[in-house]
Image (cartoon, rainbow, N blue to C red; front, side, top):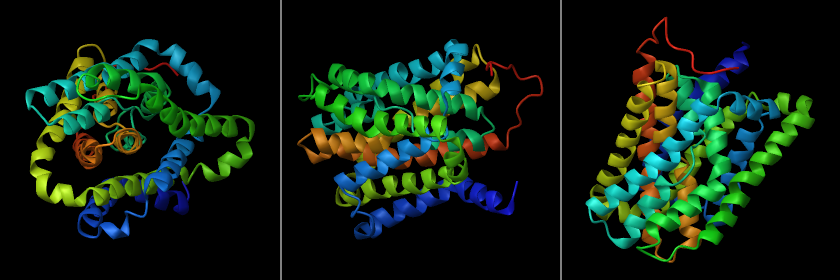
Length: 319
């Protein structure tokens, strides 16, 4: 590994620090990040998806077919456990209609690219993490609007078709462009792929800071009320995402599924809330989730990094 690559890797693994700094900036100096409004936010999220697509090839999708059970469990954790947790917490705590809708919406979002960084730090299976994120990202076109409609449609009107179209445009199209570029122009992508993880971290930090800045006033007055349900959602997802797979899978795979289940694309939830719901409070849980997801996931990753993987750990992944 060259010195340049080591610097890139170091800056990438410092992801938790960048998120903390971005959060502080968003709360106390919102004007520094609120320029990233809906249109630019959409572009930024699209570039984040593109950077993920540039790391994938057709072979990665064939590996999904060779690991249907492992990838499938991660998919179910993302789109069964997490949405049900979001709905249960919203109903149990009797959140107001817009906040309940926002919590359910963010719980129905796909895995985020930040989970791949956290998996790397935690000594999990990065290849499996990338595949799970890819599958949940593609599945988001149907699952995110469908589950939001089913679980939140009884609370407020939900434009499932609009959600599906936005998800397709922002998530799937850039990912496909990235995959095709990597497949048909490998020499070009090989020159930029070394820096894409760092670009992903920078974009994720901006996409974390901007939502915080845009709802900073609400957070200052209702922050504690909002923090508990969102933190509970992520804590429960991390715990269930680890212990249920642990019944069948090895330590490395269980860590990977836990992080994938607990860390989703809160930035996508924020964008969808802004574009398709009239009440601005619907976007607030996603903004809080951005921070809880990033800090909770990175803290867990650092903890696991100091917990060795057993030498005889079960290998659940077929290359």
